[in-house]
Length: 143
Image 1: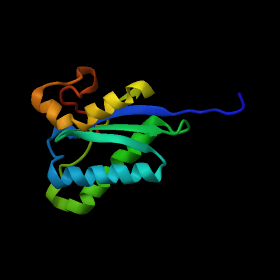
Image 2: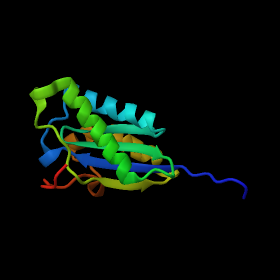
Image 3: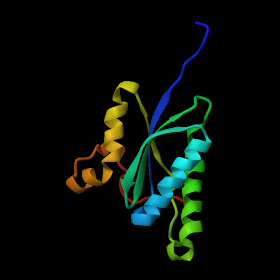
Image 4: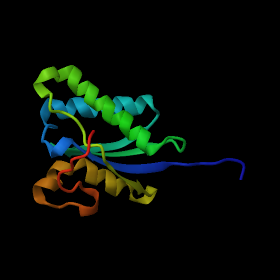
């Protein structure tokens, strides 16, 4: 073979500090816009972004050379910075848990995961969740 092709899809999940419900309305919009913008700057293709007031789901394709942990730290930092710059002291409690979940997604399952990520609010309202892909409990790790 004279060339290599890699397309790596990941389903990321991370939470606000102590699962504090801060990702609503304009805060959620601002955080998601910052995530999308920073992904674009890093040549990361975002297929879906969703979540609830206390966590984010992101389906994205990363270049093979990109470290997953470093990527997510940059994304979380970009979202936090954008929220602080926009809302300042009115949202001083905003920060992320240190941990995260990440799952590889095969190309044939990408549309199923995309639909799941995009329908987070509805799925949480009805309890129709993929338990293994949802954050569990409150954590006490530093962000």
